[in-house]
Image 1 (cartoon, rainbow over the protein chains, first blue to last red):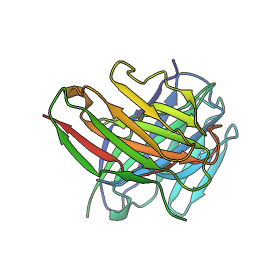
Image 2: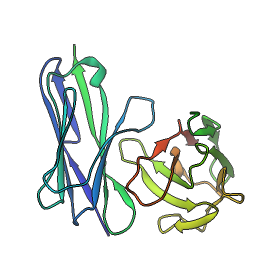
Image 3: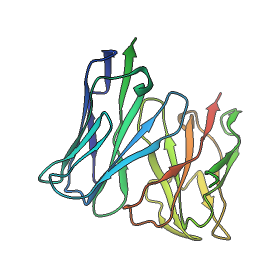
Amino acid sequence: GQQVMQIPQYQHVQEGEDFTTYCNSSTTLSNIQWYKQRPGGHPVFLIQLVKSGEVKKQKRLTFQFGEAKKNSSLHITATQTTDVGTYFCAGKGAQKLVFGQGTRLTINP
Amino acid sequence: EAGVAQSPRYKIIEKRQSVAFWCNPISGHATLYWYQQILGQGPKLLIQFQNNGVVDDSQLPKDRFSAERLKGVDSTLKIQPAKLEDSAVYLCASSPSGTGHQPQHFGDGTRLSIL
């Protein structure tokens, strides 16, 4: 079945440093969604990418969808303590939306 | 708009006991999902409802888990009997449709601990 892998599993950075998480699917995706889960909280939708090669920005966050629609990345510029949490990608293949295992971001102030 | 409501927030039971969780989705959302999130992992879909019909329950352990959404609005998920490996957060989510092209809105979840 469809698998969605994320790397790294954990990332610790100093406040102000950049952060990137990568998402790879075993199958071609029709779209990919990104969610953020704060410690003790629930996943909250951030963005959806649909088109091959698409790039979207939300303030300091940049999301990319690969040309082959099998991979995606989330880049945060100049991290802030409010960015702490786990970032999940979720890919939609032929059937259901499948979540990756997430990248947990911790920040040293 | 009101968000997805879940109850209880926490539940502690002994193995082999039964437990039930309740979810009320966002008003007007046709699709309801139940996910299991084990610590350190991503949400795993257990069952997806479209109105009151089941769309996908391929990963639901049907020998012990059951779910219903009788009137196409709120839903219950039951575990009977519980096993130690069922310790997890059970998340309910809803979306306007089940195409997978719309955001899913999650509730706060029920944290289940099995002793």
